[in-house]
Image (cartoon, rainbow, N blue to C red; front, side, top):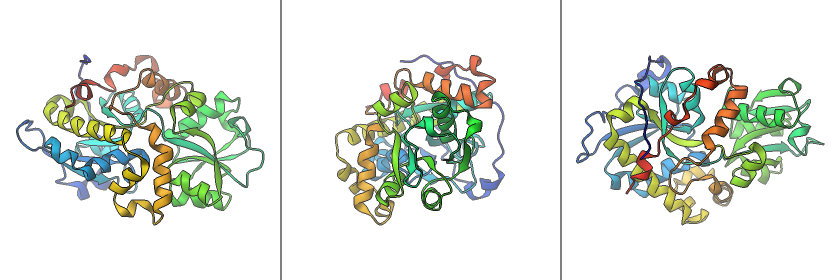
Length: 346
């Protein structure tokens, strides 16, 4: 069992814009009774994205219920920030990118991944079919590169890829292209020459003939080639304070998620797609199934943090995130995740 030093969450971040709509959604799992059925609220940063598929799939498979926990999955409200909502006490946990735990530690806040869903970003750099001469990251100079938003994981990864390939970040334009339909529109109307996104947006862009995959970080091999190591992304993270006070509840969540990760690894894309809500396929079941097949290699099979992964994430953030850069030498990666619960999962 991994030994950890817990730190009490310092400070509270205001989330006034969403507090009213979320009032009362807190699960109340502080009564951490293993014989009861605790209620837990989890916000998912893009619930219909394939990178976060395990959250909804766990619900669809009935594994939360089997584990004895009542989970309310919430979609991140427009304009809100999931971890800020969690830190404000409005939800118990977040399914989002692990790198947020490092960024928050640099801000003196203790958040840790308790189940690691993905060992790689699940992202791909998609280049427009109209962008001539862009065959590698070394061709980014003078181009308009789409990211979800400035300061996002896609932004830092784009900066890393450019710099690694000899392109200064000042030599290309960063465009907030969002995801889904806004990203597709940006490709279509020339708003971006290339951009980083996830499935099913990747599959849609390729299917429509608007773009092609330039750098694929949906697989271990592609991520190793692009970043020099694994880059753990999608995870279930919670405040250290919540985990400290509710270990039995967190164990039930880990039991459910680990069961799902094993299920994904033993079923094909068609079987996974069939378990998901029908409206997740965007009206194109075949394309949705393809997006799951293409992205499935990103997922862990056991919920564990991949060896060396946190170091790769710290290297990227410590180079391009001003917040992390200032505290890089003080970051204690052992406090940004734990394998305690997945190791003990039933």
